[in-house]
Length: 258
Image (tube, rainbow, N blue to C red; front, side):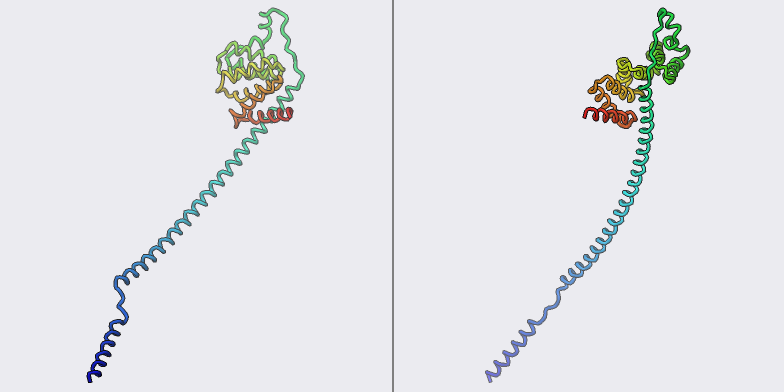
């Protein structure tokens, strides 16, 4: 009987043990953390999608702005090229006309044989036109345009004697140089062009004066000085039409040296 009682008690103990080791209840804290983690993941996904959308919109806006800028650059480049081509064609025409003048037979200037006083009175070019400063200048310039180069030189010299500090003095020096250059009096031409470059750095003729200074040195066979003057024309006035002609003459010198 004792044996049976012990057996019954053992079975009861085993049954209680089995009940104690059954499945545990879920931890409410862990459940709450899992829920929060899931919600956070959904929020992050939404934010990421919105950021990508914003980036895409920004990229499209930048692409559109770049396209517009490129169109504007293309238009400006075309306009600049058209202007440069127009200037180049104009100055090429001027250069051809000057070359034609340079190769034309030169009419020698005849010094009057009478006294110096009579010579000044009888020679309008030396006497200078009467009237205002502009009239004197215009008279000399008209003689230059009319191919009366020696007379024109005398007219510009007369102007500079009367108006050494005149408003047109820089132009008078320049055109005096041109008058001497055309008649191949290169020493005198050199002095006139050099006066413009040295005394009138703000003159409208400054770029042309540097150009013709290079041309004059070239005619005098002083190639190094010619190249220096032409290179200064390019460096100091790169956007001028004189720079185009300077480059052409430098290319010509390079070919001749080669």
